Image 1 (tube, rainbow, N blue to C red):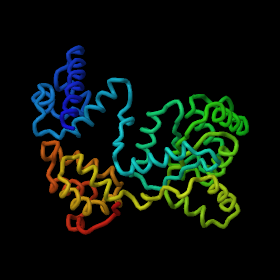
Image 2 (cartoon, rainbow, N blue to C red):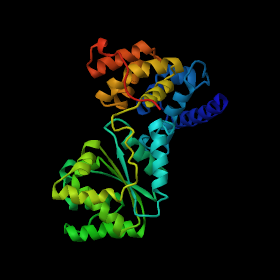
Image 3 (tube, rainbow, N blue to C red):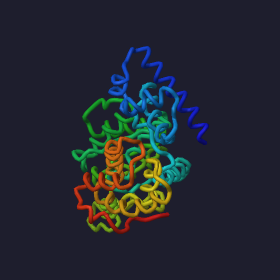
Amino acid sequence: MNDALIESLRAMVARIAAVQAEEKLSDSELLRRYPDLGSTKTWGNRLKVGNFKDLNLRRQHDKLTRVITILDGGSPDEEFFTDLPFAVQFAARLGKLERQLNDRRILVCLAPNGTGKTMFARWACAQARASRAMVRVRPTWRNRPINLYRGIVRALGEEPATNNPADTEEHAIRLLKQTPRTLFLDQAHEGGVAVMHILRALVDETPSRFVWLGYSTAYRSVITGSTDALIEAQAWLGRCMKPVFDLYAGGTRIDDVRHLLGRAGLTEATTKSLAAVLAPVLNAHTNLRLLDDALQRARAADDTDDPEPATIIAAVKELSGLDPKELTGKGGEEG
C-alpha cells in the first residue's frame, strides 16, 4: 500500500516540479499558488527531494491530488473522500436510484449543513458530467416554480429563452426527456412545497432521476401536513425511494469523525476516543466543516501534518466558542 502511494506521490511531485521550472516560480511563489503543497520546508526539503519519511502519505496524496486536479483544469470540489462512511452510504443509494426502472425515481437525503451533501453531489456530477447535473436552490425561489425551472434549464447547459412560466417548464421537460439525467437539487428545502410538486411532475413526464438534498424539518412537515398544499405534496412521497436516506438527519456520525481523524494521522485508538468527545460538538457547530477548520488550525499550531490530539481539541474549542469543560462526554452514533 505504502509503495503504491509513494510511487504515485513521486509522479505527482515530478509533474508539479516541472510546472514550477517551466514557469520559473520560486518555492514561495509556487506555494502561494497551490497552498495544498504545505510549507516551503515540506515542499523543498521533503516532497521535491523524495524524502517521504515521517509524512502522512495518505494525506499528502490527497493534497497533491487536489493540486493536480487544478493543473488539469478542474476544481478541487471534484475531489472527495469516497471512503468516508457518509459517501459510501450515499453512493450505494445513488447507484440504486440510477438502476430504478419504475417511478420511484427521487432519492431523499436528509442531513444538516456540513455533513457532506454538497461535496458528494459535486463529486458525483464530476464523475459523470454527461448524465448528472446539479441545481443549487436559493431562498428567493421558494414556492416560485419558474425560478426552479430556470435553474434546471441552466444546470442542463442552456439559457431560458423566455420568462413565460409555461414555456420555461416545457424547456426543462424537453431537456430532461432528450437526455435523461440524474439531477441533484441542493438545499431543496429552500424551494418549499413547490419543489416537491415539480419533482413529482418531472418523474411522471420524463425518464430522469432526482436527488432531493435538504433538512429533515421540511420533509417531516410534508409527512405530517394537514393543509391542502401539504396533503397534495404527500403524493410526491409516492415517487420517492424507500426508505429515505436519513442516517445523518441528526448530524455527522462518529464513524465519519473517526475516518477524518485517521486521515489526519491519528492512531485507531486515539481516533475512537477523540471522536466520541468531538462528535456532539461538531453536530452543534457545522459538523465536518468545523473539524476540517480545526485540523488546519491544529496543523498550523503544531507545524506538522500530524497534530497532537490536545491541539485538535483546543482548535475545536476555539473555533466553536465552547469552554474546554464542555468538550467531554459521548455523542453521535456509530455503525
